[in-house]
Image 1 (cartoon, rainbow, N blue to C red):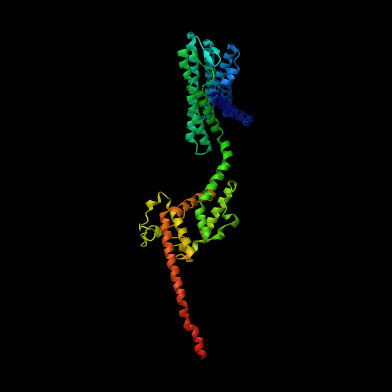
Image 2: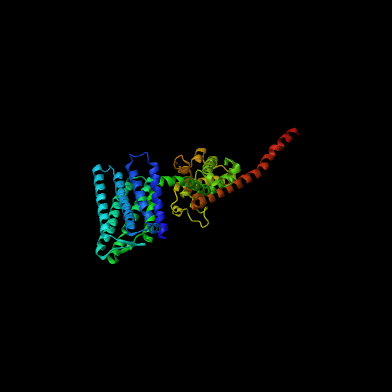
Length: 449
């Protein structure tokens, strides 16, 4: 298990480091990029050779094992030094060259002290276990403590700069990437401080494991995944962008089905492509299908204008003597608190459409003047930015109100009742019309006689 996690972490860092090296080979002026792939290559190489499998494979003799172990340790220390250089490159304004040189000298000194402590400890390596004599336990413990403290300090310096950039960056891919890298720094600090477990073992028993243990390997893999994911946010979001857009468009297309179907049943001519109107689009064509559906709903809205009711707004507000008793089974007045936070304009728009559809079915023009029907008093639909996404978002709110709003249900019921009464009255008038025309039909016969 430790091998799997260690190889995974090493692979993340090495692939990322090589990738950054390749794409920035002509951008030598970008110091941050050089420091990033320097860190990734150093840490990835160190972790690769520190896997249990390679540690056992490289075991030949004590001297060689000690050189390999020291080299792995130094690669990781150099990787930590690169992190501070990345933080300096991210500073705004950029860190002074003197500060960069001072850090490099300090990193070199810490690396030299760490190497000296390891040589003083003069450990023996047998398989996966490193042991040291009782008189040199302090040296090995100091060696591991210096590694843990220096690494966590470097990560803290980087985290401070990342947090500052997160606060000054607008929401978007860049901010998401910075947050992932900030989280990677936090997990990396825990991973680095895990080496203090070796310090306790050194002082107590004078021995420690040579390779990464399971916990350390898992923390390293998580750190590597977060760091590389944050640094390549634009790449993987770009790769997943199209499928995610298709999925969102498909879901929006499906969600608009109730409103579109209601309009299409009364106005089948709104379908731009009748052969495809009732078929669900494939995922790849969902964006185009959504665009077409938005246009068709807007066309249906325009076609219904002669049937708009000018009093819809007054009905929903409980004015003009309407208390809601016609629109509900229990006779309760319309209560906007029942709308559960729905946008009021969306409810009014849905109510206007619902009333117009009832009038259209009954063949009855809406009450009021033509100007009042085209824009019912008190209801001005919000201005929507001219994008398919914005139009769809607005129509989704209208569709939700159209299908489940008690206010819309009440307006629909009142309009249906009024339209049915109007139709019944018209039929009664037509039934009386022949009797009213009969005297006129007999007049020519009387004159001829």
